[in-house]
Each structure stands twice: as C-alpha cells, then as structure tokens.
Image 1 (cartoon, rainbow, N blue to C red):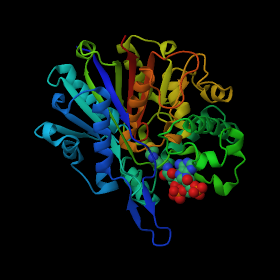
Image 2 (cartoon, rainbow, N blue to C red; image 1 turned 90 degrees about the vertical axis):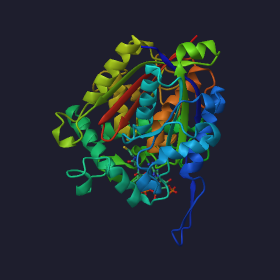
Image 3 (cartoon, protein in one colour; image 1 turned 90 degrees about the horizontal axis):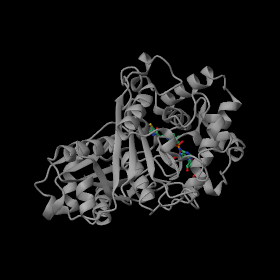
Amino acid sequence: MSKVSIVGAYNSKFGSLVQRNRETGEITDLKSIYDLLVEAGRGALANAGVDAKEIDGVWVGSCAPGLFANQEHLAAFATEIDPEHLRFKPMTRCEDACASGTVALYDALYAVESGRAKAALVVGVEKMNLLDTKGVTHALATCSYWPEEGANAVSFPCLFAEYAKGYGAHYKLEGEPLARMLATVAALGYVNGLDNPLAHFGKGGPSDKLGLVTAEAILNLPAEKNPVIAEPLRLHDCSLVTDGAAALVIMRTEDAVKAGKKAVEIAGIGHVNERLPMSVRPNMHELMAGKEAVRRAFAEARIAIADVDMAEVHDCFTINQLLSTEALGLSQDGRAGYDYLEGRFTRDDAHCAVNLSGGLKAKGHPVGATGTSMHALLYKQLVGEAIGATLTRKQPQIGVAFNVGGSAVTNCVTVLRRVK
Ligand code: COA
C-alpha cells in the first residue's frame, strides 16, 4: 500500500461569523457556508502549490449542513473552488457527526492509496450560528441515537455528562476534585487559544476578558457566569458553537517528495466505531473504541506514545479531554486529571503537548470542520509553520489527531509524521 502525505493545509478564522440583532433576533450571515468552503479549498491548494487541475476528487466533511444552513448536497458546491478545473470531477460529502472532517480525509486517503486518485482535496466545513442555541442543540442531537436520546431531550452536554458521572464515580472524584480537573483542562485550552490568531475564543475574546487562564479563575466565577449545563458539566466545560472551515491536499508520499513538497505523512490511522446507543455500553469511564483506534493507528505507524510530540484531542467537553488523554496512553487510566493538575501537557511539557491550538474549548468546534482543522494545524506545526503556540523544547516530528464523532461513537486517530 502506498503511503500518502498531506502537502498543504488551510484553516479559516473560527468564530460566530454572524451579526445578531439583539432586539429583533434577526441574524445576518457575515461569512456563509459557501464562502467558508471555497476559502478553505483555495487556501489549501495555494498552500500546497497544487493546481486544481491536478486534483482528482474532492471530499467534503460536514455534519449537518441541511439543518444548520439548509444545504444538503454540499460537496457539489466544491466545484466553485475552481469551476474551470473541478467541474466534472467527483465530489463526495462524508458525514460522521463531529468526526466528519477526518472521515472525509480517510475516504480521500483510500482513493489516493488505491491509485485511482493521484491528488485529492479534503474540506471540512460547518456553519452553526445561523441557528439559535435551541436549534443548534436539536441539530446536534440528531447525531445521538434518536429514539432513546435525542427524542427524550438528551442533548450532547447530557450525553457527555454521563461520561463525567461515570468517570467521577469509578475513580471516586465526584464533586470538587473532578470539577477542578475539568477546569484545569479548560484553562489550558483558553491559555493556548490566546496565541492562536484563528481561535474563536482568542486574544480579546470572552475568556481573555474574564482572565480565565487558571482553574482557580474558572472555579471562582459567579454561578451565572459558569452555569451548570448538564450536571456535573458547566458552561466552561462545553465546546463552542463555531463557524469555520479547514482543508487539506493529499497525494502519495513518493509523488510529494519528487515534487519537493513539504510533506507530512499519514503514517497510521485507526477508525473504530462504538455502538450508537449509549445504553448498551459496558462502562462510562473510558473510551473503549477510542483505545482500539489508538492501538490500530500506532501499530500501523509503528510508534509508541513515547514517540508522540504533540496531540490534538477532541475536547468537545472537558471530560472527553481526560478520557482521550488516557485512551492515547499519555496518562494511565484514572490519572489524566491528576496529570493536568500537575501542569502536564502544556507547550513546555517534557514529553507531549496537548491541544496547542486551544482545542475545541478555545479554537472552537465547527463540528464538520474540526477533524480537518486538527490535521491542518498539526501539519503546520510539523512543517515548522506553527499557527500560535509551539513546543518549547524541540521542533515536533510526530503529531496525533484524535477526533471523535457523536457520543464517543466514531473514533478516528491519525499519526502524522514529518517526511524528511
Ligand atoms: N464556553 C464558554 N463560554 C460560552 C460558551 C461555551 N461553550 N458558549 C457560550 N459562551 C458564552 C458566550 O460568549 C456568552 O458570553 P457573554 O455573556 O460574556 O457574552 C455567554 O456564554 C452566553 O452565550 P450564549 O450563546 O447565550 O450561550 P448558551 O447558553 O446559549 O450556549 C452552550 C451555551 C453550552 C449550550 C453552547 O455553547 C453549546 O451547546 N455548547 C456545546 C456544543 C456541542 O454540543 N457541540 C458538539 C459536541 S459533541
């Protein structure tokens, strides 16, 4: 099987890219889903130095554009990235909830590995803020097992609250100890987000204005500034509702090297599905399928966790950052919270930094774009063009993306390695 590399990437500015009239509730779109898709696609091609005529297919990851922006059949619009050269090429949308972007990358990867496509463009995009919170909560809930979960008003915060309760009970951390661990994770995201110019909550943003750079600052917020969303998860445990897009260009590593591209190889992947209904899972204190995805990705890449310099993990809720950190093997089971409390996984970490981008907590979480964004920002780090915070001790060589869809149902782990 030929190995495949990312040779260019682009990440749009993330944020709530709308204007809301507070009196009338009217929403004006400042950057549409179409603008975002085209911007990211063109940006990645330019970054790769690849002409659209060399692209044999476009894969678009988007979670629920029909519900969020009234647009199904979204991939077809990717022709507008370059109508002259992309018209008549295959365009495919991939949907696996919040892992849609990574799944789009994997489908493009299969096409390039097989030789059917020589080069492919992958775009992840989501426009969430045309809806109010109720609408967003409903759209996201359609990614749950509807008959048991969404239909019974079990939202995504509620689903991940089950993991938080399960983890707290199993490791006897309920109450203040777990709250402090989760706030530490959130604060790390906010600190890293301050250095990411593309972040939704970056410099001058809401978390910066409130000075939320320590767990203490978050824990000391008055209840109305950090309300319970789904016990035990509070506002600052939840990822942001974000508009944004990110894109990647991939080709075979041998072609990339011949063409003198800055290449980052997709050294290994693990794509593992958990059962959709939460009610049938044997336990709620670990990511069982996530651990298997890690095992497969690391086996394919022939690496161990000690080889990994940086990871972007799916902190859709702070509890999932603890679970992902353990699934990766960065912490022993039940120990991730203690490790974060001890100050591990910052940019100064002696072993591995986590979510240098600010993660979903600060960079933001435009659900269908999150997977491509993780890969795009890791790519930039690995080729020495980091956007925002970087590792202080060395130029990173190996990065891992751990992107989750639904209530930890779709688990995608990618090992990325700089090609010398
Ligand atoms: N984290 C921190 N602050 C947040 C926030 C979040 N997730 N969401 C909103 N805020 C802030 C806003 O900046 C605003 O601050 P201000 O009063 O200083 O201006 C304030 O909270 C109110 O914003 P609003 O948009 O009215 O919040 P909300 O109560 O409608 O929404 C959540 C809050 C948590 C419900 C929403 O962010 C959410 O649904 N997040 C999870 C998204 C999700 O499930 N994604 C998929 C994961 S699998």
